[in-house]
Length: 208
Length: 360
Image (cartoon, rainbow over the protein chains, first blue to last red):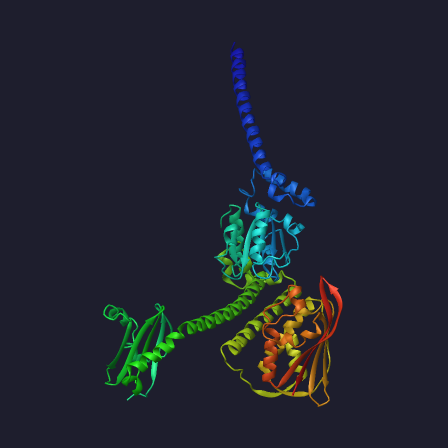
């Protein structure tokens, strides 16, 4: 009799546990589908402004996006500082070889590169970059931009709206229309701490 | 009694364009007094003889026309006697007000532009040097630092120990050259734009040492470009001002660094010409210069055609400055091109070029 009661109670608990687990499972599946849908909306394939992404980088990008999806991340938002440093590709377009490249590498930025002046907006360096720093004087000449770096920065932002384009100049050029079109403007005299924070803030990561 | 003279201040609105009125007369020659007179004087003019505080008599004429105001004050007898003469002189200045205004604006813009170029260069050199130092210093790290680590020098030393010594040496030499550049740019700015003459202390020096020291400052950058420096011998003495000649040679070396073809030779030779003067020759393969440009590259603001084409041109001040300072030291400089390009590399045309400096 007592035994029968225990069996009946166990059956009740078992049924309740199964129901709870089923609900949790359903929520998890729904949440995962929603995240995948948001991420795919922002993937290069669906991005009309970035049709010229280099197909050779497809595998690497796929890995990056898988990582992004797995972490429940959308376009860098919610990425940790370490993940941004690890994954994001930073490109400097500058006719002077500033040691900033070495400084960023010293601080854990994994993909940092400098080019002097691009001869195409579809070059591998540009299509693969996530963040592009554009100097104002001495660049954009090869592509014939009258406003040099300003013109180049505007063209980059218009061609690749999802990339972060940052004007990087020795002078304060607060009045040029390019300032409103790009994601940020940083003076070259800025300290590495300042520059790093500016990049991170574009991905929603604040200063520590 | 003060010296007989006239003074005036010319205004556009509330902005004084030019004034030579002495302090003791400024109170009387105040263009604002027009505003109180305006109501009773439809001509917008004051023209009267006044006694200033020390008892001296002056003719004061204030007039406004076409947006310009002038305060004119004179103790010249003809002006004191004749209001017509004063107003005629005032009209004469006022008729040129627009031209004076434009000349002043142009001069101010020139000063601003020169200063802006100067500060741009300084900021670039400082930023590069700071970043170069930060690569080898804890200040270049964005990580938070435990304050207890600052109790001794270990934190600074450990950064250096972890770095390659060759990289460290290259960095130190880059910073050295940058600082030399800053110092030279300041001197040249004062010389070219502030009219401060170069202090010259001509002394006997070995020409070999003068050239060696200027090359050493830039040699590491040449090495980074893979340039081999071949140095001739000489024991000849020259009489020259060391400091300014080093500035001139710095700009020549800076030009060579910029335009020499990577992985080639820089041949530095010492010769005596037919008249017994010492000639230093820098022979190299560098960016192609047309025969017709040999003299032009020493003109202020001129950049070589191929330099512009290769997107390498600067402000066109380096070689101009070098020539000017060498001339101050009784030395002359010429550029010789073979007139035929030798090679193309990275879409740039190169040619065999010579820079020859003759010391008197």
